Image (cartoon, rainbow, N blue to C red; front, side):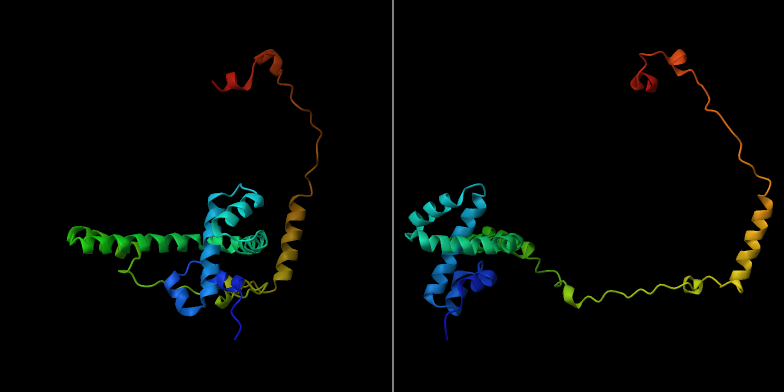
Length: 208
C-alpha cells in the first residue's frame, strides 16, 4: 500500500501529537508533518514576510533544498485558510500539554499543592464536569418548507365570506365619500429666516 499524501495527512492531523502520528504513519510521513507544522507556526508568526524569506529560513532550519521548501510552501498555502479555524484546537492542545507537564514535574517533586492546582486547571479548561454538547451537522439540518397562501385561517383569522363582493362594496362606499374632494393650489410660506436669524447663524448656535 503506497504511503498517504502529505497534504492529505496535514489536512486532518497537522496538530495530532507526534506519538499518535508515529503509531499510524511511517517515519518519513511523520517527519514531513512535524516539519510542516513548524513551517505553519513560522508563517503565523511572520504573516508579512515574503516567500523568499520563508524559503531561506526553512532551507537553513531543516537543511532542505529550495525545491523541497517550495513544495512545502505550496502545501502551507493550501492549508492556511482551513488551518486558521483549527488554530484554537492547536492552542488548546498546547495548553493541555503544559498543564500535564506541570503536573508531572510537581509529582516528581512530591508537590501535592501544585499537582492539585494543575489537575483542577486541566479539568476546568477541558470542562470535564459538563455534558458533551450535541452538535447537529449542518448537512442534517432540514430547512422548514414554506408555501405561499391567501388563506387567512393559517393565522387564526376567520375568512370573510364573499370577500370579492365585500371589497367592491367598500370601494363604492369610499368613492362616494371622496367624490367632493378637490385639489387646491397653494404657495410655500415665506418664513423670512434670514431676517429672523441672520446670515451668520449656524446650526450649532440654534441648538444651544
